Amino acid sequence: MISPSRRHCTVRLQAVPPRIGQVRRIVSAQLRYWQLDPLIERAALGVTELLSNVHRHAEPDKACTVEMELRLGRLTVAVQDNDPRLPVLKAADPMETCGRGLALVEAVSENWGAQHLAGIEGKTVWFSLYAADPPGPPTHPVVLHAAPALRQPTVVAARLA
Image (cartoon, rainbow, N blue to C red; front, top):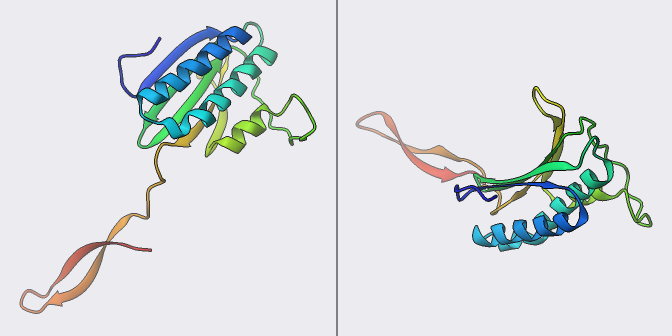
């Protein structure tokens, strides 16, 4: 279900192959709605890999929640399941046909991680993508000259390189 908030989307599912494809389409549609078309391919690939990991590895069941949030120019996609075992990133062998999911997530995202759920069994595995160019350096005041009559500096905001 898509929440009424324009910047948040949650989908609950059983991580089985037909549902994984549906969630991939939901993620793509939501990003189009948020006008984040440049992120669709990477977000869809990342969520597919995380859901595939739930399908292959999660115990005792395949129930999970996918959550997308857009905040401060950063899209975070998280998958929560009931298995407390945290995933392990292995060195990716280009000749392997499986076991490369987290390496792909790492390759397509700006950041990723995994954490246990507070107070309940399970974990969240997430990745983030910049929705816009990363912010430039902060604006700092620069003193150009002192006003002689007031003996106070005149300050102009400027970006420091």
